[in-house]
Image (cartoon, rainbow, N blue to C red; front, side, top):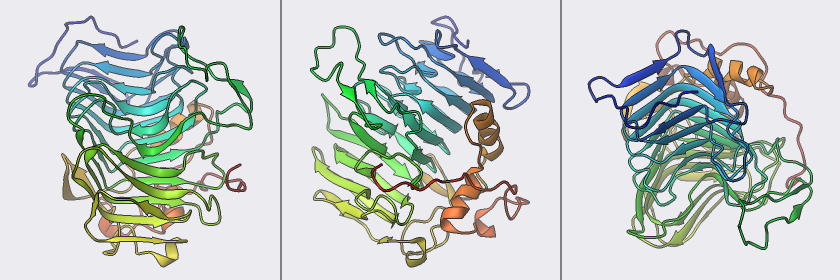
Length: 394
């Protein structure tokens, strides 16, 4: 396990770096008894190029695969999956100034990527995450933007929700001593307790209600083959100082007709801003009071009736990379972790796919101006992940 002693620190000029000699060829397995990557009071670390899986499967312990309760850490080119079926997220950020860059996370876990309780000024840059299942009490999210933390930024990240690890029938688990009447309730038909969304937030209990958090240049999607439970893919509100810009929500046309792509709610605090949004499928967007709509918002039942999401001027534009909250001229595509995610899916026993090809299957070919120099016109020729279309809500 990566578990340095507390108080071991690098510096800004010389961080302590733990790096795979060969990118993606190191696997750290917690075997459901240990935390594969854990930094507690150990600042200025860089972790790069590894895969990790199987957090602690004990209902009274953190089951995360990555748990960082330290400051000034970078997790780069890392793929992780399957936390314990506990209260914990797969990636748990409880320190300040943490950067997740080119990271992928999927599998079991109440949440997939979360900043919370003092995890301030953190960034998820070019992350890909998929919620697959949880049988534990509490809200279920792919990305949690805010939970008693401030200044979280999600840049050029992709999120989805498959529900593929949900049991058809199960007893809702809780920590010992939890007096909630829902503990021990039996759920049937793959039902999810407290489904929240793909890009969403929890709450701020004390202090300023203004989270100062942002989602920039990102994509949320589901297909008819996914078992999606929430009311909306992107669900924001309840706190103030939020920004949703240049982002896309996609529901495979002809499925989940009652599901909102984007739902922007009112709540405490001020300064909620939405701009440059594209919505495809479902029941479209639901925007309530308290949001400033600053143009370029469109929705349609299919991609053919909305603008091009890569280079269009009427909705989102996900052609170039964001860095530190600023849109750059650096092309975003192809997805930098395509091969790593493909290989990790095989290692994890999932159906492999290439992110770039999946996005092109939804939104059409990515133009050259959005591709880095010398990148191929198309990714490898493996077919997109097969989808067995279910009736909406099943």
